[in-house]
Image (tube, rainbow, N blue to C red; front, side, top):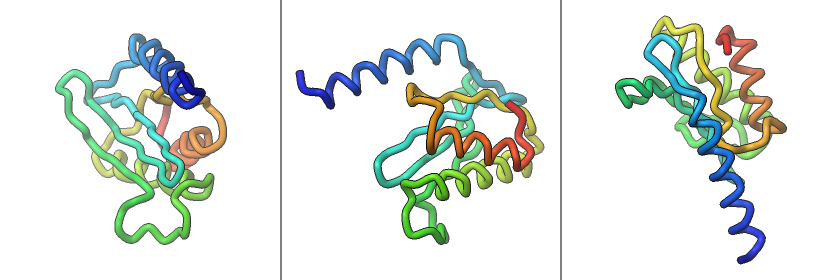
Length: 120
């Protein structure tokens, strides 16, 4: 097994462990973060009804930064998801880092969402 496959398996184990305790509702959705090398994505998910309430990513039209895979892009995406949830009158959320370390882009996205008024 190569190193890449090992890392993926470890992240999947962490993801399952996190998801066993974290769950979202309509009033308090789960913010699920996914990051690739070039982009970052976040979804607000209601696990009770299995629906996505809002989403934001660095691949959207009108995204004005040159790179979607850096901390600056993560800040913009964090602000976007907070604004979209506040438009739906949702102020609380549960953060799901999806097996990624709470560091770098994931941390910047969370802090930007908090600064924009989202509580988690």
